[in-house]
Image (cartoon, rainbow, N blue to C red; front, side, top):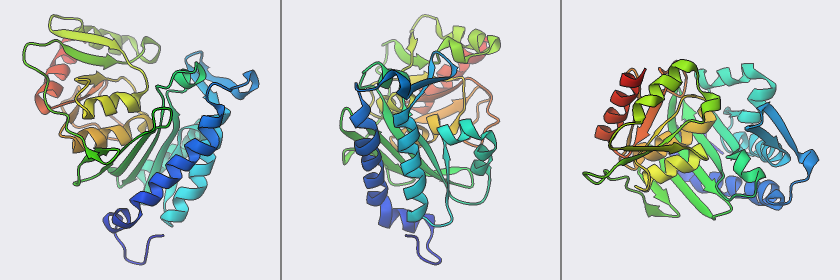
Length: 281
């Protein structure tokens, strides 16, 4: 647990492995036993057929909500399922206490369909700044981590986003049309141009990991729920990437962003995607 007068940086230096253990345990105890084993009564819709929740989501989030504040007394948890039940709890991201931002199963639709393309996302933020990031893909046994100022890693190996190869089409993962306004749809149309190859996104967390690994050039996302983006934004930053909103500003986990926004392998690619999004609006 955090000691008196210990900074967030000092806490992370001592307890990153404890957070990793908690994330792995949540997946081992609550998520993977239900993977490809879900009964019909364990799956519910939230806002629509593409917005699902399962017992795995709920139970993994409950476990992390219990364990993480014990590691860092005085911290709070903002989890996707808790916010769905009580939207006011999201406001903790803007308050003074350190906040754990949790998406227990990012890519629930894939999880429900037996696709391994899902992950558990945990980020530690303080005063609107993400300090630590954990992205765990349990079906692939991959763990990506980042601590601000200390780099990004996948299973202990450094991640480098690099830059897109000159002359090659940019591959950009984009929001599902169900989650876009008419204005955002028009902005996203700017990506349908020569030299860009847009495609529908899967798990947001795994798309960020693909950018950090240099396997995907950029994203164009039209929603700003912090649990989908906080862990990935830091992972991309620490791998050398960049993120920008359509206003030309870095994405803020506290909200109020001009959407869609992009995360990309490098700053030049981020600027290029924002130019296309602005031209399409």
